[in-house]
Length: 193
Picture: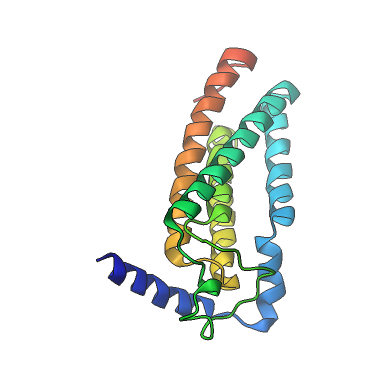
C-alpha cells in the first residue's frame, strides 16, 4: 500500500516538475527564496497588525510568530530525519527524468519546511486579521500554495511532502493563532471574534 502511494507520488511529481521551462525558472527561484517571500509576508502582516492592534501587540505577535516558525521548522527537521525519505533530486532512479534547478538538493524531503512555514504564517496572520480583512486569509493561503508548488517545480520535493507540510503548517498556524489570541486578550487588548 505504501509502496503504491509512493509510486503515484513519484509519477505525479514527474508530471508536475517537467511542466516547467527555462523561461519561468528565475521566477520560481525567486518565489521559493525565503529571503524574498519571508520579508514580503512579514511586512504585510506587521503593517496589518500595527494598523489594527498597535505596536505593543505587534511586538507580542512577532514573538509568537517567531516561536511558531521555529516550532514548525524544527518539527519538520525531526520528520525529515525520522522518515529519511530522499528528495527527488537525490533519487538516483528518477534523477535523469526530472528538471532540477534549485541551488542545492538537500538530503531528506519529507515533509517540506517551506510548505509548513508558509502555511503556518498564512493561517496565523489570516485568522488573526480576519475580523478586519475578510479576504486576507485567502490571499495568504494562495501565496503559501504558490510557494509550496515552487518546491516541486525546482525538483526538491514530492507532492506528498508538500501536502503533509501544508497540513502540518495549517494545524500549527491555528494552534499559534489561539495562543496569540489568548496572549493578546490577557496582556494587551480585547480583540473581536
